[in-house]
Image (cartoon, rainbow, N blue to C red; front, side, top):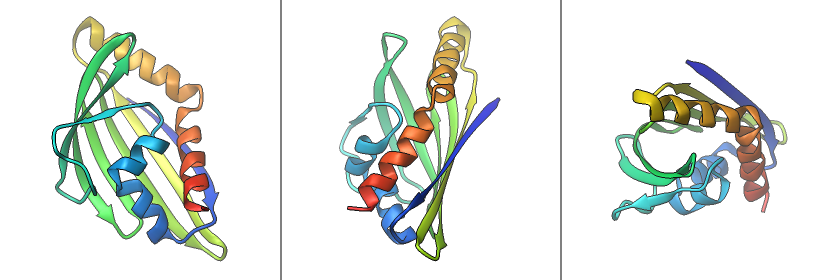
Amino acid sequence: MRTWTATTHVDADPEVVLDLLTDTDACRRWAPVPFDLEGPAKGRLIAGSEVRVSGNLVGRRVGFDVRVYEAGDGRLALTADGPVAMDVAYEARRTASGSEVCASISVRSGRGLFGRVAEQATAALLTAGALGVAVDRIAASAAV
């Protein structure tokens, strides 16, 4: 399992950042990769939420079951299980001039040949800076 991290300053309180992190429509704007929500689960992510998302990975449409474990006190923690498994955490900590947002994604290999290919593709996206782009988008959205 490999883990990627990114940190940035946000000119907003942690509550504003958490609002962006848990709003499903906002998530689509800042997420490191494009995705679609499947089913009626729109609105707000809360602890205990389970949603299904889908998107394209390695030229193939794939789905992930997302389980939210924490969504409060400036933190969002979830897992996404699909062709690869990911543990995702975002934390917004109050600073004198807003928040420091720290993000981490740990990726575990999936099953079979496609799972290994999907893990390598996900790793390549994260190594290329996709998580940093996501936290920068969060910062830009929160500062509005």
